[in-house]
Image 1 (cartoon, rainbow, N blue to C red):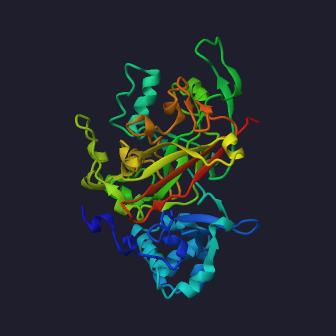
Image 2 (spheres, rainbow, N blue to C red):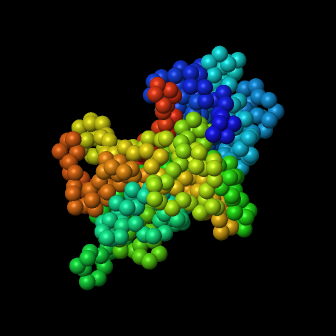
Image 3 (cartoon, rainbow, N blue to C red):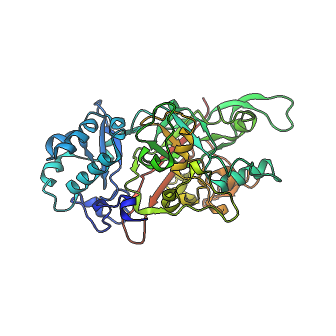
Length: 441
């Protein structure tokens, strides 16, 4: 593994600083080494949506930047789609062009850049912005990549056989509902559906009583593939644009009754929350790790294996869940962290997920979203869902203010956070993915 393989370049200079002062603050999610993409408009204004880049606590408006800044012709071409609110067109461009624009934006925002007087007027404070989904999402597929989550959940239902035999051979996934994906800050109502307890003679219809979150990442597809033409794993990375935080809200009681034999349906498709910023794969390049399987486990089949995937398929990315109850909010108390895990624990890599998805000829398109599945780690403190933390409701836990939780209650606000960082180096953050659960309609 070398710098060329990882596409490391000037944008990964850990000591680089921006002329946007807030980007240099310790603990900032959006230093100059990050530069994630999002879609925004000025809060309180009924104006068109724009594509921007997060830098510190500001947003660089690319529609303004393309006209006011000084760019080489290839950069002007790349910025053209972004200036016209077409992030998917930029996603579909070759990876080399996406990386070249990242370098240009980095140089323009770097401390001492001659672009500063031209671009300073192109900034908008994030606090003054309204965010939307970064692009129209055509299709959404959710995977099941954490063996720790799969084993913990399986043990609740099959104590003697928690992990089904196909898990270690194939990335398990199901097709979700793109139309109910919402951006961070959108409240969702508790869903209703069919419920049946183990001793009930027949099901009944009513609001879910076992509402849960799932701590996940979402991967946006860059360039798609033609129907019938699989994406080889050696090319899969170039078909990945970037990552977002994803909360796959789950009604566990609906799920338990409906999921056999075809899998999740109404228990999942009432709402999925994502964070508004897409952290590009280029920004995460310095945090790639070797991908290994536990000793004794089968190695992936050849079409899901490559030297590059073994060398750098994993990502050292901290992921966290925070909770704020209505009582905490009323008392002015900050959210509390429920769990913390790391994406390096995933049993399948992003490249394997994408290659498997297309291995039968399925055609992915720019802007499609792939969920990783719940990212639980090997210890109880790393559980990515309440189903695991509370052992299916059998062991409610106590919050610092004395409240008890087994599943979510109305008014609970769930926040997902993630970041990659090494030592005192830059923090490549995602911002928050926030969602509040409202009462059933």
